[in-house]
Image 1: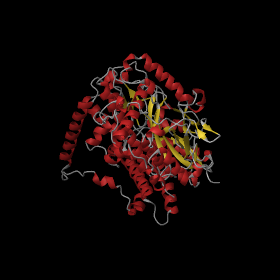
Image 2: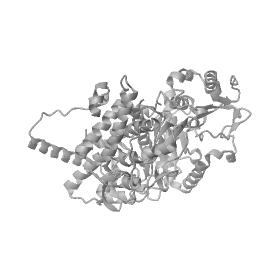
Image 3: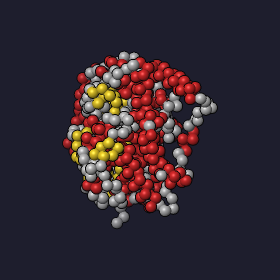
Image 4: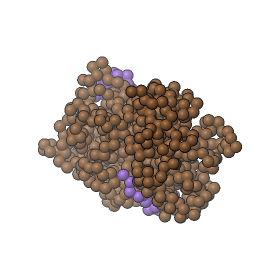
Length: 68
Length: 571
């Protein structure tokens, strides 16, 4: 309901149009799923590279004093 | 009506010196604030063109600013112990410490910091503790200071949710600059590097806040605000939660929840912010003309990095305050708001129902949709010629996110913090077979909020195209150094950038200026948050020095200026 009433106001978020659209054409569901898996694997591989090397020590050492 | 109103955000950062487990949190926070004040001083000096015998470039360290004053000092609101009835302002340097009755809390932390710093030989090289800065106002009009044992960035006043998002994110740029600057210096000294995290808990029973503030008409009874906000705040976290690994204040129960803060709240309404935290906080510091305004202080929110979550946090809350001001709040009363807050937070499926006093049970999406429908009806009714773009944007995004949450919360992984974090954690759980209490998952939760773009997982997800942004990076970085132009923050920030050496305590509604000579100065009051924007006062800052600038201010706004050698206000 809200969408129908509002979309006509010309208030689309301008920056969002800068977001690159996926460039690959639509493909079959299986190929899509495989690519998603590959994409996630690549993402995790990248994140692995920046994660704190000793997670346990990092978590244990992350001690804060109370705030508001 | 419109989503526009005067608002702002306050971020307390988690502070950590890895490899220095015994480091004092107040000292670390003080290094961050002092370091950033020096960074600003260097930057302004470079912008003016380095000159003089001790001129330094932007790549130097604190010593580059020589004996220049660093930081602006802070003026505590409208208290004025140094304003003499005879018409002048004593500079803070000239005042006896016992006269500074308005800054007792900071003196206490200052003493603590000075003591801790003088005891810790390893900081000696890194910091001249006689020039410690606990409090400063930076050129974008924000306050950067040591709050308890965390560095805090309080954004300048803005008037739109989009600007609230922009100047909140600008605070993350400030935090990153401070961290990068200290890292550079740590490489040359023994002082440990300091890092900051935009989150709200250490998962060991401690929480720190990310507050919002909204100017509300004083004529609205507070009880009406409370009644409207309890169900709204209990359910808002489905959009604005930052996500958390662990259940309970100490995170001891394995699992994932929507909110960082939910498990730290015990009451519905109250004045406290550090103990017995209430969903609706009653602190009333208008920092403005208190006859006309109250300043609603919101402490329930999570620190957000996602642009969509931040825009919705400020936008929807402002629209609900419109409902309150027009007495159009939907009839919703939760049986137990605190229990509902936690029940909703503990349900990442976003399907749980919570009981209302009238016997109904509703999901958080249904609660939010009741507010959205009421807001849409009111805003449409009050703007027969069509609502403004800012209001339409918030209503549209609110609807879009609720629709997706109802269909499949996983769809929000590209827009909301909690959903993005949940998707990432799930991917790790699947790949590596991790249980919810695995320290790697807790580490990912913490590192999501790391302010360094190269380490922070939010920033990595944005860089990988996994999270959408609404405001581009250049605009956010610019906002770290420039004030909003449509509030008194423009006056405050521009004063600090233009006459940095003459600032003698700056506050939300005051700028104190020290002139050369003994006990000469002026105090400029800024009681109206929407006054003194760029249109009004931009040209005043062409004055060649602070004294002439104050005269210019007094010429246009005689009633705002008190001080020595200033032409008296015309009756």
